[in-house]
Image 1 (cartoon, rainbow over the protein chains, first blue to last red):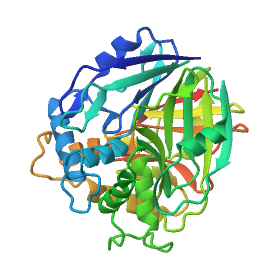
Image 2: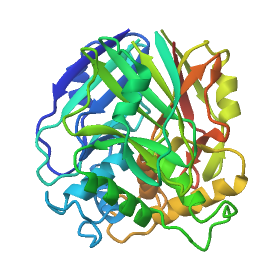
Image 3: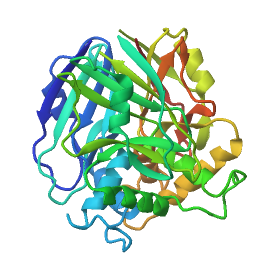
Image 4: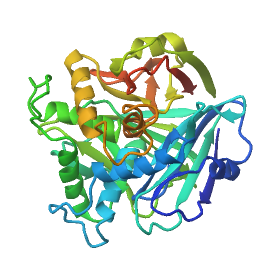
Length: 136
Length: 136
Length: 136
């Protein structure tokens, strides 16, 4: 059985942001056992799972992703929407448009340090729409 | 309940290609609610979700992935199958061997600009086999 | 229906390792049809699917991921846990914290050359905990 919820995140600036609480609030009660699938309906932002303790990690993610896919590469052709656009598409594929997390004992079975990340790659990305699907 | 379909894509050259229509044709009618899981049974091609409007995006994806994992790095040891082989394996892990998309109201709940990509990383990759699993 | 198994991998050194056999041993009998979801409860190691034949591939994965996210970048701020820590977080997001594999005829529907990888990005990562969820 799959139970789906569509919801919109509050507006986040460019960067990496922990959204575990927003996701849990949107989906409501979890089944005892299952898998949560979370999907972002956009092509220049992504979802990921990583450290949710030290905020410095979020800053370093932004720096390292910018190093990985720099703006202004002279060979780019899709440049009309600004220098942050095409790199944002590639970063979104690198991080991925969805994550899946097991549900055990009625809770997300995240590890001690894990949280859900919104990876916002645009300078002005707007509010992002997500679909949460709980499979049980 | 899971319904699986094995199918083979037509031959695509090296590069990024939108295959949303081929995938939908292969799996037939979708349930009202669920999740589509799509898996590629190969190690030098990948699946992703990104912009399906401007073909320039596909060209820039190919350029930026080549910049990310260049061919001919002198430290490589798995080189017997050609200079495009080992970079193709790494690119495949970066993009990923599977994608999952929620199904709402009997349709893939993709965002306005999203489509399904085949990322073909080999010069002569051959036809690629996919497995579609519809979970409902 | 989802059936979950929590298990711990034996200790692996930094690098890429094929763990298909360990995963299959941990989850026991598979249903005829379904999807296996495999999740790692850590933020500096990842799971992936790629070539399981030539061990040179594993070595080259380690080299290419180190080239992709080098240690010692001067702009990093999360450095207290050592120079391998922050790069490990980014590599983990690049490769991903989970994989999903279709199950057909009671077996993982992997391609001929595919196996499951543990990507251990820390110098001393310790034993890693996984959750396997079989959806059928």
